[in-house]
Length: 430
Ligand SMILES: Cc1ncc(COP(=O)(O)O)c(C=O)c1O
Image (cartoon, rainbow, N blue to C red):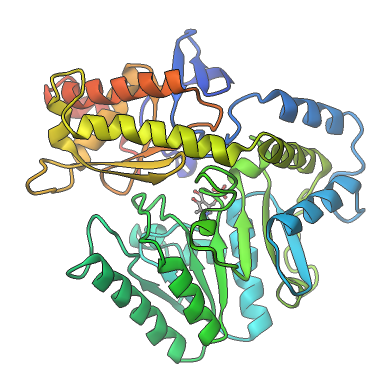
């Protein structure tokens, strides 16, 4: 596999998956807390998705959108229902979150005739094009920033960049406003929970204040739900927690139930032109569209938002119990758990050197992720020191309890020196 597509944390190779479990080549079972960066929202091998895909694959009405087919139209209609809006709207269907965000940003620029994009530091919107060049994480890592992008701080309740949380929110919003005052900003791009950049859950009200600013300055607001959206935060959309109505919403990852598909929903005046400027031959193909329809049916009929809310609370309770010093390893992990935060099954656990300083513990984080894999739980990390806990929504409370026990043990084992620098050197993650 080409190095350019490697982001690895441990030497795992899986043979199969079922629900929230993965099985490696040696037949060893893992509880999965990644959902593959949330792509497997409904878990691995969901029967409803598998049946829909088999059916669509057996009689494909073409393999793209130049000859229209029913599944694409049905999916577009479902997405319009999911993202209500007053004006005439359109749906872009693509292959992933990256192109959904890229096309949305490009269309916003073309339609408004404005060049600027307000984005957030440590944000992630995609691996190429404009989506990449307004992604704080990638630009900070060496990608070329878009010359018209302005990056502002995302308010972090655990580590406010100004004196208090409220002062940080005010500062972020005033930096946004400063950029908008110039009059050349086409769109504000925001993640409703900043995930790859450190799993930051913004203070309540931040998104609605951002939406007010966008409205006041007649600028489009694009909310990137690619990673956190579709039931995982305990609501269908992560932005619902602030009750906003974004102009543009982007989807990806879990939408396809493991198959590649992404979507952007927004005003017709934004997405209708320039005609044929975002052509990917197989975008919107009937097989991936069938998978997405099955995912949306399953999420709605079985109230996955409620399930995610309930299980998320159980998970967070278990982690806070460790933080309070009640872990089975004599409470020793508590010293390293700086913060536990989240909504539903979007959970971040921040590891620190100690609770007095709250200094970040990147070395420990790499090793804890590795040790957890050794102990039978797959997880990824984001930012410098945050475990990203985003299991498939079908995870059981028993699996959650096992994962909490393993997190506790892994932290203590790493503190005791079980994992060496050499062990993790080839798998340094981001
Ligand atoms: C918030 C967000 N937007 C967009 C993307 C891009 O999605 P993909 O990698 O599936 O193209 C990602 C991927 O991590 C993401 O986290």
